[in-house]
Image (cartoon, rainbow, N blue to C red; front, side, top):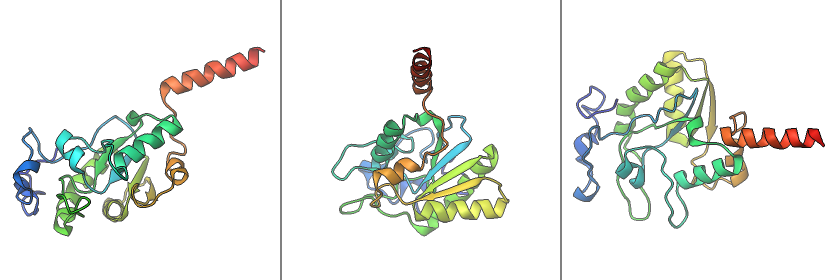
Length: 198
């Protein structure tokens, strides 16, 4: 579990939230975000938490705002594909909020990306995922490093950042071979049974 006293955080520029103004600093048991563990064999890796994720303390939160957010685009895609959040474990390449820029969140500091590499390596080795989907360049680079260093044998799928001009169809296609929501499967099975009985 990420925490500022760990060896990974000691040289991180985000340690103890020193880079954030007071209004963005969080007080909770573990300030850096951890993997959302839904006991899945599919891991989603995003770039870094945004402001909402940072405030809530969980990765990938849907936020309604002008232009949308990665969290809201992903949540809408899951609705279209009838997939539940619980189908995935979810994390970020960087576990701390990089801060706010003028019109968007700041890109993660390369030193923070390097520091958080250990957290992602621990998470990926602990579960031995069947599939990892990396969203955005930073997530893709870090996932590639972990897969190479640890000689992991998992399918790695790459997708642009969800807010990077990604069309809905392309985003929806990322969920191929992911089981549909349990309620949806039951509903579909009922529908198919009714059609066969006619």
